Amino acid sequence: MALQITDACLNCWACADVCPNDAIALADPHFLIDERKCTECLGDHAEPQCAAICPIEAAIVDELGVYLNPPGSLTGIPVARLVEFGLWKGAA
Image (cartoon, rainbow, N blue to C red; front, side, top):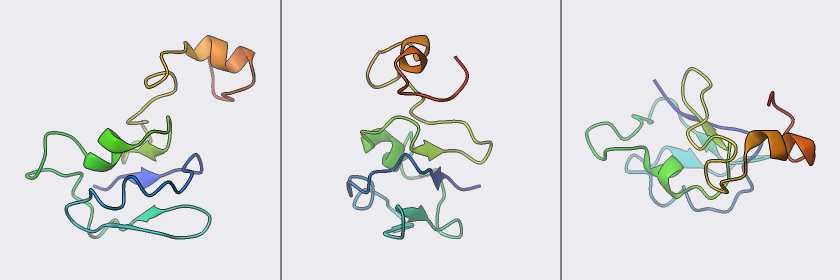
């Protein structure tokens, strides 16, 4: 069980300092989560700290590929509108 950072990551560094297991490292083209170190913050916090602080929608997924900050969750913009304006390429 480990989270993953997607190509949506902008390398803003927000997540790197909050990981209690030092599982996040700078890489190219974006930060990566070391699956050997990532515990999804179980036992440390109620929610994964990287996702809690991440300002980018769709940048972190769980082991099933589910976005922890799904499109529209931070901005409040409905996914259909994001698709309409070309800001999201996923299914509406």
